Every structure is written in C-alpha cells, then in structure tokens.
Amino acid sequence: MLRSILLVILFAFSGAAFADGFNYNSVTVSYGQIDFDDFNADGDTIGINGSAAVSESFHVFASYNVGELDDGIATLDVDSWNAGIGYNNSLSDSIDLVVGLSYEYIDLSAPGFGSVDDNGFGLSVGLRMAASDKLEIDAGIAYVDMSDNGDNTAFGGGLLYSFTENFALGLSASFDDDVTAYNVGGRFYFGN
Image (cartoon, rainbow, N blue to C red; front, top):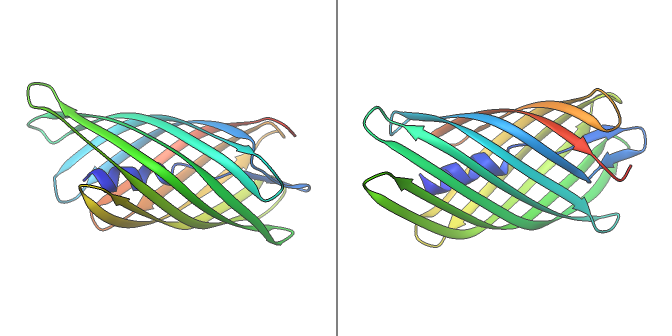
C-alpha cells in the first residue's frame, strides 16, 4: 500500500506549454481522490509540489502530500514527500521527454494503532505534449522501490489548460494494480 500511495503522488502533475516551449518553473497545489481496490479503502489528499529549472535540460523537483484514508473501520493518516532531479529533452517543438529520479518518503499512522514509515527511490519517464498553445497532455510511467515494502509500477496521464502565461488548471489520473487516483490542481508559473 505504501508504494501505491507514492505512485499516486508521483503522477500528481507535470507542466504547461507555450510557443516558447515548456516551463519547468512552477508550483502546483492539488486535491486528489484515491481508491484502493484490494483494501476497500478510499480517501482524499492535498498536496503541493514544485519544480525549478537549473539548466536548459535539468530541473529539480519536490512535493509534500497529506491525506486521510478510510476503510469503514479505521482512519489512516498519510504524510509523504519526495525530492529529486529531472532531465527534460525536446523531441520536437511540441513534445518533451521527461525523466525523473527521486528520493521517496512516506509515513502512515492510525490513531490508537501506531505508525509505520518507509523510504526508497522513484523513477519516472513521461512525455509532455502541447496540443495547442493553451492545452498540454501528459502521459507516463512511474516506478517506486521502497526499502521495506517492495516495488510497484503505475501509469498516468493528465490534461493541463493554461489560462494565462502564469496560471493553469489541470486534471490527472493514475492507475496501478490496486489503486486508482484522480487529481485536480492549480499551477502557478514563475521565471517566464
């Protein structure tokens, strides 16, 4: 379950496009819904993530997410964060290949039952595609390997509509064997 939650967080959002190319300097605030098939549990998450270009081809990123899962018997609090470095390469004027490598951390706690935490690494590969100067389509795959809880792979995608050069709204979804997640969020760009 820990690695499934982390995969959902990796897919929260990617970026936005304009005639000048993709901007990797942003902060996104998001709300998500998670549904665990095997555990008959679902919940809400709130997150903030950011990205900053350090060169034309590299960017750093980080995210922090909190959430609450409910299976009808107990409530589980989720806190997670990650930090990493990404590589972005233009495949064409409207498509970027994006690869990320990250450190992952998660803490799960249930009132009266204690808590458990884990850490590991994540690897993601995806495409950012500009459908127009306002609409971006993202798709990718993410892999998480946790030190105590094994590994997992998820697929995800999203749409991001830019209202201005500095603000966009997005929808995204991710799927693995056990988890389906949907997110909505607002992205603020800087450094244009």
